[in-house]
Length: 384
Image (tube, rainbow, N blue to C red; front, side, top):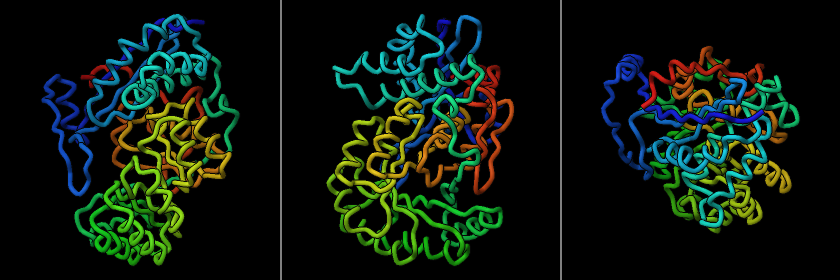
């Protein structure tokens, strides 16, 4: 059975339902992009993403999603111009050969990463979803079977402006059953540790991780890691510049708290360098940037060096979340998966039924493919 159709959908959604109604009516002003100090990356004021739908000749469809929090038009153009023409006519039940062929299209030109990889990730996820639906099997089972049906998760972010409010929210999550939380910080070593102290006091049973959003030089990161170790911190994520492999290796060698890295990486080749140089203790590939095929290859690279894999999940919607769950189920050494409460709520708006989630675990969907049903009419109405 062949693939006959490849469609792209660019979504830019606000978190409030009233604005989604405006989007559906076509009154969609340009999004606002800005840098939010102390972080240095550019952010959108909406939930932006790229969805891809692939269609087999019998009408069966599979959905994929790229992590494209800004300018999803770029990977969409790559899908439409470079990937889709090659993909049409290929097998609907052979995602790995398709991924290999599509990867090689721009390989000698240096495009293994960046937007090219993001576009391929969306297509690859859609191909696995399609293969599962055609064969009637879950993606996790196509990957060799699930190690777990309930995926341990951590609550990512306590989006409040003050430590007192963050602490209150942490206590609320703990009361709902959360066991782990990650703080999005990078406000200075003293300020970060003060936030950790406030959260620990309010919710003493929580494991606490810190995402520093590459805010620090090695010296300050060492101070932060030492402070987290004194407070029984869980892990320190992205403390240094994302290309500084040597700096991370120095930090890993001197830190009693595990250092987590992976959001900026997309290929097994990148992760191989990091694990070989002992520059991370926890690997965090984002399936909506790697695709399912490469995420599993990354898992094997990490497994060979006894590095656990805790997939990253950011502002992706329900398709990216379902893909992350499928990979998390198929990874043997899995500390936890990232649960973003707000993007979860927004992401469910494109699904016919919400993904089951708790504060401590998420259930692996049981249907074929990714196990979620995308509301194609809603996607078409909301697409830019």
